[in-house]
Length: 311
Image 1 (cartoon, rainbow, N blue to C red):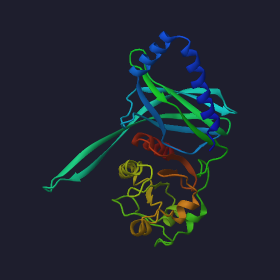
Image 2 (image 1 turned 60 degrees about the vertical axis):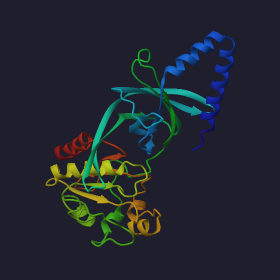
Image 3 (image 1 turned 180 degrees about the vertical axis):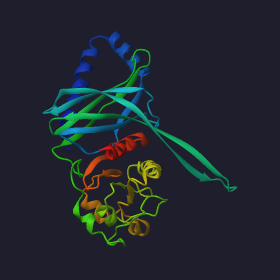
Image 4 (image 1 turned 120 degrees about the vertical axis):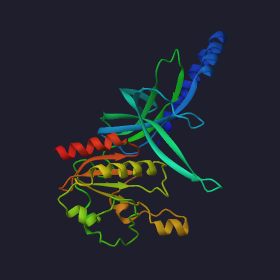
């Protein structure tokens, strides 16, 4: 990804604004005072795979000390970065979502202390990108007069086609031939019922639809795997008679635990997933009907499953 056009434009804007401000000391003082009163945040993408067509756009807004911005909604404005220029494309409203999970730690006296963790993030459910290339997202929130907030923009790349299997695609055929006893580094982590009650081969040849979650709670590179796996596990208990649910570990756990290296498993490579976690909802014909990269809520996954059951 080449961000030179974006960086060059930012420098140019900084120079131009700096020159104009120097012409009026009072304006400079006013601008600096106003800027110092603002609360500064940065936007962080919670997905990596954006393509031409319809996309789900999840992101977080965090302060320097890791605190989430709490706003009912955020306006996102998108610009194409072309030859050092930003061309406005569209704007959309992102809604606030929250997921909760519980973590525990043991004190020296042996007592277990539970922590309730709430993660706030924002999602544009459906946004259409028409062209590939580098795109810049700018964010604004709330009444910036009463509650001034500064959110740093971010740049990302839109590809011509998704790196991962898309909605409407059949699942990669390699999954059909996985033996009941995983080999070649394919590890299915033992989880509480009802996940992994069938093998991948059985799920692919069954008349039931199924859900696959690729996540690595122990070695997650995005810190989103634990909450995602918790959500899938919870939802699986509601729909275990209608669907099968499977968890796939993206990395070879033996190598990770003994050598400290993250080596992708064969199925993770076969699906060409650029990140983790990923969740795929698959119908009885082995076609993908919905998918999620990164964070999502329990309600979103439930809605996807209910739509599949009703179809």
